[in-house]
Image 1 (spheres, rainbow over the protein chains, first blue to last red):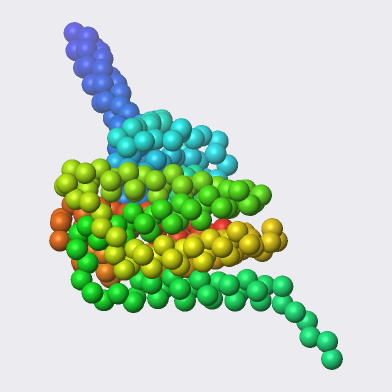
Image 2: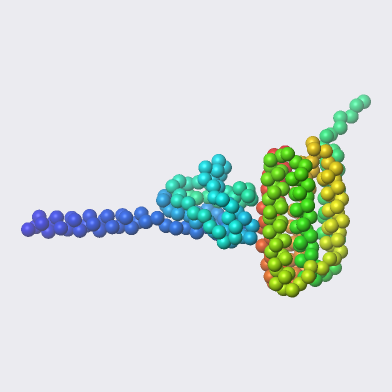
Length: 108
Length: 179
């Protein structure tokens, strides 16, 4: 009887544990606003697998691209258009249209 | 004794002239500007930089210069579009004035210099002028146009344009270093 109770408790804790693990790994969506020629925030700390959405609030077109080899790049975004990407590693990026605009994605 | 001529001495002289004319235009007028006059100066200043870029697009073969010039056409047209939408909404007609008139007159001299520049000297002359012009316009917006604007939306538009001009200046300086 004690063995059965022990097994039930064990299964219970395993289920709870799995549930907690899967909950903590749920990807988060982060918004980066492009406003007044800046990425806000310029430096974003996130978890591997999180999604980043860039939203252009300026009336100038902007894009986002990996600095500086363009291994990924959005198309030009007009005002209120957005573009998203799942982030798997820390990366620097910039706007190829306004080359002084730079941002950082940092996986913690 | 032979003197060695600096190939950039002519460019330096031309750029010095551009600096003098551009900065003097913005600093000469201490009189009060009305909102329609501020709007006129803002539109004219953007149109002038587009006209410089159009010359660059015709004359330059340099990839960085062409990229920069295309950016100037797109961004300054976007500013003009916003300014026109604003003055239309406010039922204000931009009014020609001494500052906008001086800007136009001086830009004619600069355009003549750019058009007459040889292919060897053009890129440097164009980008040096862009650095000087953007520095002068940034100072003018901060020190003259924003303080002179009474309408809050006009003031906000000018404040929103400043970061773009500063980004253009940074871009121009990057291109300048590469030449």
